[in-house]
Length: 296
Ligand code: HBI
Ligand code: FE
Image (cartoon, rainbow, N blue to C red):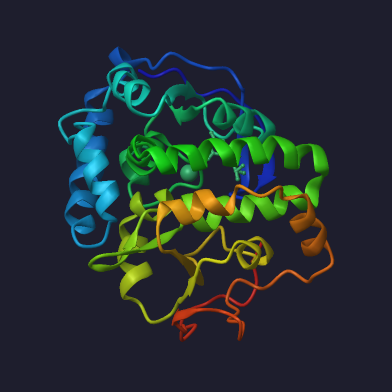
């Protein structure tokens, strides 16, 4: 029986009104996982593996394979850490769940990726409001084996620590960047548009919706455009941004963001479903099924 995750408070975060957990780092209690926990992992893993062939980015599939992740059982952080440390210097740490932003940024800035130690219940297979082990391990971890993406994640964390010192608006701008790249990003691969964002990769419905539905916009990556754009936390995204390469992401985070935050403070935020005439448009969405309010 797993220890119940300690919830310290509820907080309005970019994932909505969710519990924020203690910031303590927890050894993965691998021997405590029940047969049901391993079965939930297996079910989700096998289902996503089928859906992601032809949809996930080449690099995601390559790195996931290289890590030897499989449906057989919940991976051991220690096993994955040996590979990660040797490849990009990253390591996974076990946490209770969502961390206060500064704590999260500080981990990323030191190449530590926080992974929730518990996995969802069978009745939560299709949706849960907060990141669990499957979202973090299956969705986020493989690309940390890619040197350029690994550098981007650390640069993002360093930027987050700085933004935290600048103020709440800068944090909102930077959180949008994480949302539209690390969580819900698309990339132009040799075969066409593919998924690299963890929020999509770990979601059955959105893995299909983001590429095959006519409803969402698909727009070329533009750093300031993204940092101005609000997003959804409770439905599929209205807009997906498309990078040409992981290098494009890394290059975008090289400049000092201070003047960017200043420019953004003088501009209106852009609602999630907007298409601007300066956009590189891969697809102008029909907006079918969009909710009118609820952008953050
Ligand atoms: N904490 N454990 C965890 N995982 C996240 O992805 C996470 C977080 N805290 C804050 C957060 N993400 C987002 O607000 C980032 O944009 C900072
Ligand atoms: Fe995530």
